[in-house]
Image 1 (cartoon, helix red, strand yellow):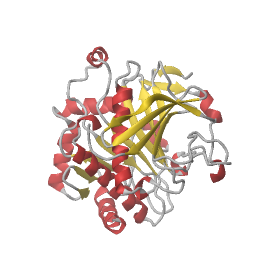
Image 2 (spheres, one colour):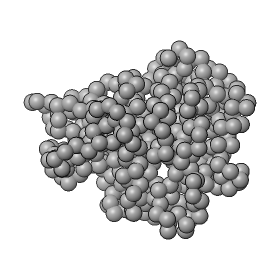
Image 3 (cartoon, one colour):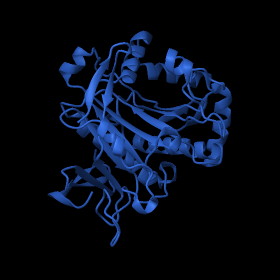
Length: 41
Length: 313
């Protein structure tokens, strides 16, 4: 498991969500979504 | 890396993912790999002290690039929550996450079918209790979506559209409705409390849904699973399976004879309980002959589950 480093400097926007992409130490992708409101498909 | 072997007698692929034999199995809650990584605590899959919704590539994948995908979708950082107990806004956000994953995985050349699902309860083989689901990106069109394609051809139109019209006209098995979604136990349900959550409009996938339809879908799914929990006053095990349009490339779709517009977003639930304590097992007739023998009538189950949904609201 372990740490993860951020990919890209800015969060992406998807509908009401913001998305941050990370790469874990073992090379697997990790995505974190958080609610920011609004609905842009 | 998994190996695919074609089973000639069944006419289907079998996936050998032998590395999954050693996957994490029902850990103590202090060692849950889906919890946030708390200061001073053990490392987990999500190295942050808090999160809302997390998606990561499965550490023990059944499929992986360039031959498909396997992802874990964690609904919340609250270990003791469930899909049904999520705040409505979080459940709606989850629909958007699923939509995002459907689009992103579906755009890959090595993914022919994006399958979003949740296994809930040890009765259906859950190995982690933290609320989560999974997504498989199959590198081929699996048998069940193929059967739905055949149903469209047999009925001469979209099968879920036709069946939804039949269920609404009959009404006895309808469990829940809102402006965008209908929930019912199908006429020929295989499981005692099998339920289908179906979009009223023909939407091939989450991708074509309007924002309000995603909100209504989340509400319908939560109403159903809360009703399940209210039915026998216990956490109700189920397999949740979301069926959407295949995402195969145009060439693959043509080879598989998938017509444009095929697919109708719906979510099927297969709960193994037939009473509060008794499980339905897939035994001789189900496994050896492929014919389900049911101990209950869908109309009677629907009445009980409809009342439970009202209690669970």
